Length: 325
Image (cartoon, rainbow, N blue to C red):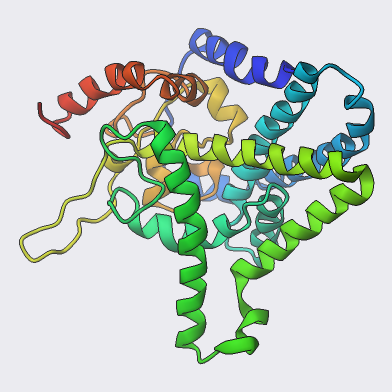
């Protein structure tokens, strides 16, 4: 029942170290070809299908699972959440930034299946504009622990998504009851409620609890990734108060071949932020970006031990003159 956790956070990081790194520097022509590659474009769709089938299958298994000892039930729920963080949130994150409406919609659906559809609103229109600033709930501040960051990031994502939609609707003159039908944050929240209702219909109260707790595990996993991606990195302002543009140095990268293959190049994060609409297959590695000492999975585990995480990361920030002691 705990196998997804063991594989993701135990076996994969070791294999990633053994298999080594791959640094890609595609030319503009190569990137254009990769953007058009039909197989690369279909990979997120295949992952989406696998997740939706997995979630449906899991709900059908709840009645059987509840007959097992509590520690195995817990493993089932946590494993489902870990897989949801990878196949629903990570893949949804890729799709919501595509230039195709259908793909963006599918990305929103995936996020809604773990109760985080508002991420579609806040990530594209909030995080990408405010990353590496104190206004961004998804940017971990220097010396902020993961235990303080994760609740702040989740609450901030929900609140800012609703504020973004409220401001957008006000600008186009949609207020009051009429605005409800045009509120994207509300629509994704309602879809999450519908998914919760479906879980209850299929597996009763136990199914509802499994759905909600597994979704929370997925969300926490995402925010731990956010913690690792931007920890301690900030953009500066000039004498006139103008914020510097997003650069490669504002995101942590890692070039481990296996983890990038499994996470559709999420660890090439600096290129993703510099070119937000660029599909995963065309993302470049950037050695000039700050480099993590290990893959995301290993760093997420380290983040749960704040003194260890600071010992690993602060010397790298110091070497880049991003902090001083």
